[in-house]
Length: 159
Image (cartoon, rainbow, N blue to C red; front, side, top):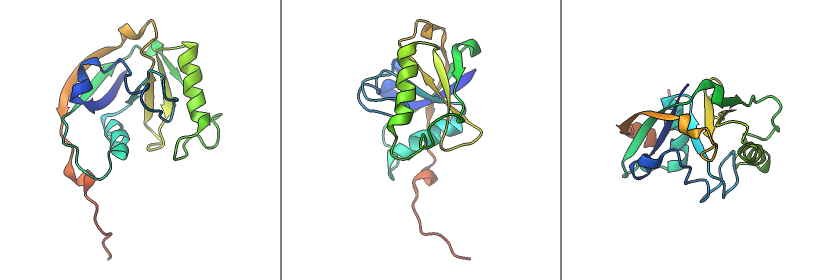
């Protein structure tokens, strides 16, 4: 299965290491856990990053990665059965506990989880400490240029 990861170029060479997780918490993990967040499409990877960037166009160079994960290494987590507030902003302890438990269990290299931004796309979490992570390959990398319109804030137009 192809998944996508958009990150700053300075982190591009070790994209599968999960260096951000120990520094900050995310929707699916508490701070201190090594984890890699990916998306099922390039568009969702851009959107997931965009919501964290603020209103200014990034000056740093970014790289889009296409990662190939063997399908048998991916576990699916459906939205049904999750706590009602799994998609709350800010993130809740319930969704973080799900991710932390999955990381600790070592049940799979990857966990496909719902996205709050798309009903049809999914986020894919990678456990960089799993013994089979080496089966995940970086198939492609390319420099990513943000469309500046993603950062334009204007007044709504009236008819």
